[in-house]
Length: 254
Image (cartoon, rainbow, N blue to C red):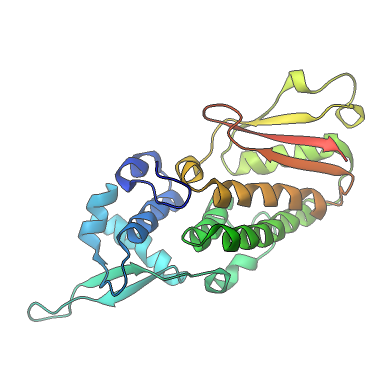
C-alpha cells in the first residue's frame, strides 16, 4: 500500500474486491492512478486487464461510473471506418456536487449500503485531507441520520448496540458484540463501554490506503445513526484497525 495521499497498486487490490461496487472501486483507482494533465483517457481493454476483469464486465461497471458523474467517456483517435473506440478518464475533483440525485434517498431499503458508502468514498478519494474530512463528515452524518430515523426512536446503550449491529450486518461487516466488554447487568446500565467487533470490511483495501476517507465515512455514519434514532445520550465511536484485520465500534453512555 502507498501512503495516505497515494493510490494502492490496483493489481494487488482487485483480487480482494469481489462484489460489483468494489470492482468499480478498482476501476476508479486505476483511472486515478493513470490520470495526468491533458490525458486522453484509457481504453476498456487496458483497464480490464489491469484489474483482472473481462472487458464486457469492465464496460458495464464503467457505464455505472459514467452515469454517476465519476468518470467521463471520451472519443478515442479514429483509426479507420466506424466510430472511434471509447476512452475513459476520472472526472477531476468530482466533489459532492457530482453525486447522483438518488444518493440522498432516505431509508435503509433505498440502496445497497455498501454501494452507497462506496459512492461517498469515490467522490472524495482524490481530494486533499481537509476537503475530504469536511465532506466525509457531512455526508456520512446525513446518511447515518437517515438510517436512524428510518429505524425509529431508540434509547439507551442496549438499543443502540442492536441498531449498530443490524446496520453493520447489512453492510457485510460481520459484527459481533464482545461478551467480555459488557460488564455486569444490562448493557444500558453498565458503566463500561460495549464493543462491537467488525469481522470483515468490503472496503478493507481502500481503508488501508485512505483511512481518513473510508473509515471517516463509517465513523460519521455511526455517530449520525445514534442521533437519527434519538439516542442523544449515547456515544458511538469507531476504533479503526484495533487488530491486524479488524476494527471495533465502541458504544457508551455519554
